[in-house]
Length: 135
Image 1 (cartoon, rainbow, N blue to C red):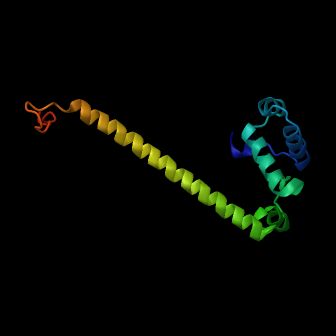
Image 2: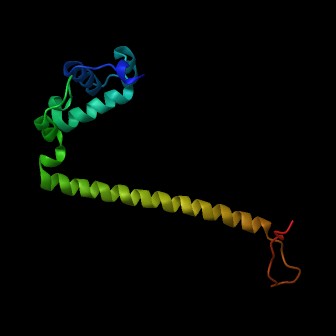
Image 3: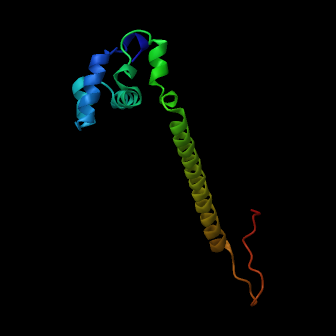
């Protein structure tokens, strides 16, 4: 869909869609019925939760005041900044754990391959060898 073909939705339309979502209607069915993308419905819902009905932009350029009011960080800076900092720290730690799990999986697989490729030595206590890499 090109930029000239994009549909523009009014604030009233977005608000009614968000209200239906929040009441528990199936999002996929709602998207088909309204002929909008599901991701747009979720985006509108997130904007609504962050700044209320004013955060759902209508047709035209947003007012600077509305944009500033929609920002949750300016509403209660102390409480939200601590919460945001904690969430960022949790996300950072979860990323590190995920990366460590990937590393562990890699090394486990490498160890399995090395153990399978080793040939036992002829004598007890003799070092085992791996096949020659020469072809």
